[in-house]
Length: 266
Image 1: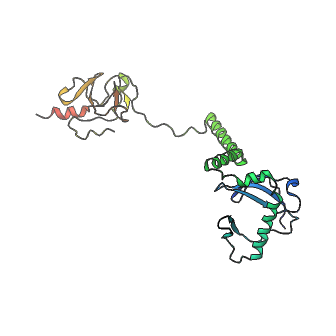
Image 2 (image 1 turned 45 degrees about the horizontal axis):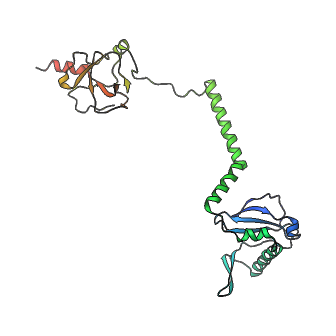
Image 3 (image 1 turned 30 degrees about the horizontal axis):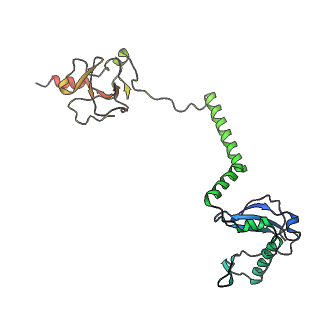
């Protein structure tokens, strides 16, 4: 016989168990009877769990459905799943047990209301599962784990044990004229270089060490900004990493080496 293990409702196979019928409603010797619904279809159901005193317990896995029709009059038993070695006496006992359970509650108005209602809609089933999950111990366990992880991360941050990688070299960012004069430009171009591959930093206060300085050559597209020669790009901010951003435009510094190359050309 099946032992009557503690069970307080919830999911059982494809069914979600709801209200349990009290002993005075059901009587003795049958087991525990629950109102339920199929979590996949929302259809109403009764689920009976035989107790240790019952003289029958399921020994085979059957899945059946029954139907009755007024016109033309007939009743039908449809087998959706049967074990390969299924025995018809086992099926008959199954039907007898279910019939006994229905007979016990046939005068119960709540049982009638439950079994004759429309199937629960998909949205309502989803909301119900969400609420049950939020109340479940698993939700509490996940919340506890997340809290612990957050605490460890905060502790590491405060103690300096997780400072991340050391920052690498930075490009000139907001530098003044004196600082820029000691640095090479992140990228520069020669006016004759057609590729002009833009590899954003604010416009420095003066020209870079390797940048062409004023006077600039407007006919070659050069403009003078803070004493240095720059070429305005068609791109608009946000600029790329090695371009200077100035008054809503992107610029690249002109290479001083290009001036030297031009000076030897007749």
